[in-house]
Length: 354
Ligand SMILES: Cc1cc2nc3c(=O)[nH]c(=O)nc-3n(C[C@H](O)[C@H](O)[C@H](O)COP(=O)(O)OP(=O)(O)OC[C@H]3O[C@@H](n4cnc5c(N)ncnc54)[C@H](O)[C@@H]3O)c2cc1C
Image (tube, rainbow, N blue to C red; front, side):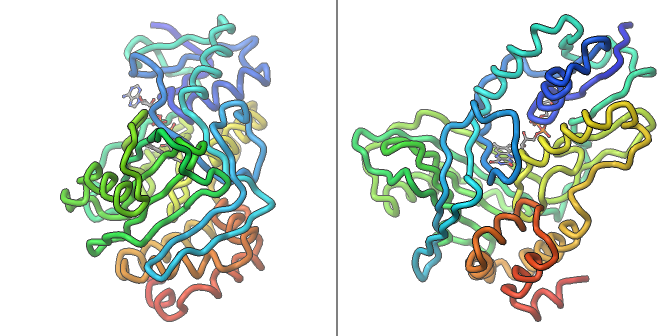
């Protein structure tokens, strides 16, 4: 059986981000790294978006970035002007290609399909494979997105739509999300926040067609890419073992109230590389505890009062854009937290603390 100094379980976003960070910082020059990944081929399968509140390694994988965005509710559209932090969208296909091209130049890095060929006893293991457990009653952000191309230039590609709640809610929280990559190409997603126990919410294709034809008034279009997903709005962290460090979604890098994970993964990779020599004894990396607490209250409100959520989101975005973006990207200070908290309906939130 082969042995490696470092083993990464799962070569997806977190596994490859960490491998790349290790390699560019020359941490695998005199060490060995194995990446265990079950997929047969890498191609675009996700579109990662986030507010760039921190630098990361993947500016050259960006499809498009925007400053301003809108939120729609039944009562109209609200535009948020944001000069500070661009909202960036990354093409996972370009991300995988960039990283794999870099890693294949290092002969100390090897890929394997399964863990069975390795002896992990003396390795430091970074795990991004989530544990399977009973998910009943837990909240998910589940969605389908399609990228469409139109013969005419119809999109305003200077502004994206973060949430359009002016749609069927079916006793859950539902919105559409539109990222115009150019004047004739856009990614349009139908997104639900639900316990996923109602299969009828998953008629995504019908929802998307209706929204594109009736709301966006686009009759003629071609689907050029599609993606499906379900992001757990709860932690799927496997138990800590002596030589194992959890990363990615499996390491709690998803912000529970929003599903944003990509930039947290990048921050975590940098933390690991900066502390590599003492990583097994250094304190585990977390999205700060205050966000865990605030997000749990927020999700309790969401579970118990889904009908109130469109207005709650709208009120939140009426705080200064820099404040909301920092809050949603886990970079806010206490004064910024308070500005957001004061925008929330107090009694409902207090009643949902426990
Ligand atoms: C469609 C989609 C869109 C998303 N969009 C955004 C976004 O816009 N912004 C954002 O911040 N977050 C987004 N997320 C959330 C999050 O960023 C992604 O899920 C991200 O890929 C998480 O990285 P990860 O490494 O934890 O998991 P993954 O990227 O899923 O990587 C896990 C890897 O482990 C492999 N694997 C699993 N089981 C095994 C096994 N038994 N043996 C070997 N290999 C295995 C998988 O094949 C996979 O490659 C999105 C998620 C999805 C699903």
